[in-house]
Image 1: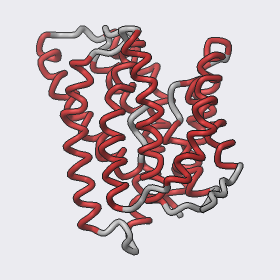
Image 2 (image 1 turned 180 degrees about the vertical axis):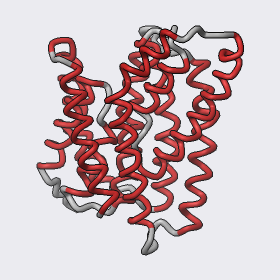
Image 3 (image 1 turned 180 degrees about the horizontal axis):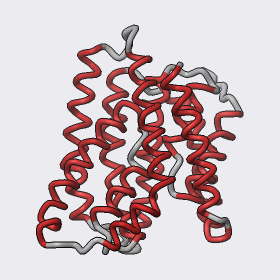
Image 4 (image 1 turned 135 degrees about the horizontal axis):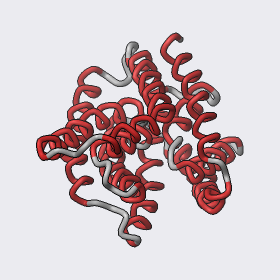
Length: 262
């Protein structure tokens, strides 16, 4: 049995990997629509494959963050408490609805488009939200509600990620930064990446069971993305992050709008 890998797939994985290494976001936000719009994969296949791809790549990232003490496991656990059950419930509904049915591609494309627009908004307004959070006095009343709101954020992200594979990065980091303004950015990022591992693994395995994971595609993307992420992380400190985030947000707005209107 021979496996023919389209060389453009590893190259695309490399390009997206570099962007992820530079900015910390852009994995599912760019990879999934790229697979759908440029390579013509079915939305369900693009989402399912990208979820397992994210579980593998973010698994390595979370281990590095853990070794550097960058993960607040309490926050990670609260996010997972909301996201993993939400992902399981969403998978059950997808199975019941019929992920191969006529209406499924339109549903996935619409949710993917909305998730991309939300991600773009989080990139554009992140600094403003962080400034508001830092000026806000963290009252005892708000602190009591922060845990419950974290679980709620996890549930919302769980639904979005399971249907579209988008939302675990930029949306999660922005929400955590707002809920926990006193938490160091490195711990916000590390906690969000660690949370993404069980979420994308559960959602990805669920999609595998539903038959929407392309193993050859998964291998093709990993071949390019792993060295790309390492290269991007190496040069991250030398590249103007604000410019990259602005460019990424503009691309996501265009792609999200196209998916919703198509």
